[in-house]
Length: 307
Image (tube, rainbow, N blue to C red):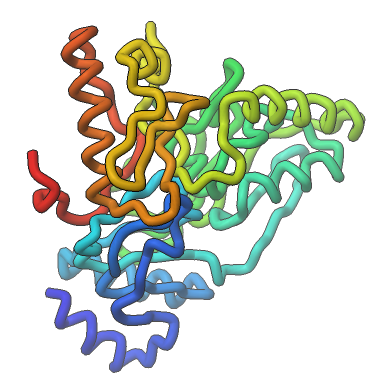
C-alpha cells in the first residue's frame, strides 16, 4: 500500500511530503527511528487530499503535535506521519468563544489568554503539547478537564471532508476524547472563555505553572507523564513506592524528582526507554496488583525489545 502513496505524491506534486524522515527530532524525548513519510500540508486542500488517500488505501498513519507523549521505535514507523505545523497559526475570539488552530502550542495559547484577559483555560497552563493533542487526550489539571470548556471541534474526516463537531456530540473520559468518526484529524478547537482582569488571569496561570514545576522537569529530555493516574491512585507514587526513582537502563532513567517521568540523559535508545516502561509496569503489578495504563503513545514495532 505504501508504494501507492509514492505514485500519489508524484501525481499531485505534493512537495509537502518528505521521505525517510527521522522523527526523533520532532519528539521531546529525542529517540527513535525514521518514518517512511512525513507530510506537512499547509492548507485544508492538501490535508484533505492526503488524508482521504491514506484512509482509502488503509495506509498506517500517525498525527504529530509537538511529540511530547510519543515514543518512536528504533526501527522507525512504517507509514505516514502527518504534522499541521505549516498550517496558518490562527487564534480568533468571537463572543467569548476562542477558536484555536490545532498546531498552536499550549504555551502560546496561554500567553494569548493573558494578554487578552480571557479566563477559563488557566488550568492548561504548563501542560505540554499542542491544542490538537490537548483536545485529543482531554487534558486536565487542578480539577478541570478540556471537556468542561470545549464548545466545538473542527476535523477532517476519512472522506476528506471538513466537519464541525459540537460539544453535545463529543464523548469524553479520563484523558480521552472520542468523536463520531472512525478516522479524523483535529484541525482546530473552539473553547468557551470569559473576560477577566488580565492580571488576575496571569496570577492564576503563574500559580498553576509554579505548582507543576515543583514536579515537572523543565529542561530534561522527557515525554512527560509515562502512565495515566487511576481513579484512586497516582502512578508516580506507586512507582516511587517500588523503589524505582533513579533506576536506569542504558541512558534512560526514571526521574529522581518525579517517578512517573522518564529522562533521556543524552544517548538513550527507544529500546532503553521501552524496557524501563516495562520495568515500571511490572514492578507496580507485582507489588500492588494494579495494571498501569500508558499515557505515552508507542509508534512502530517494539517486538525487537523483547517481551
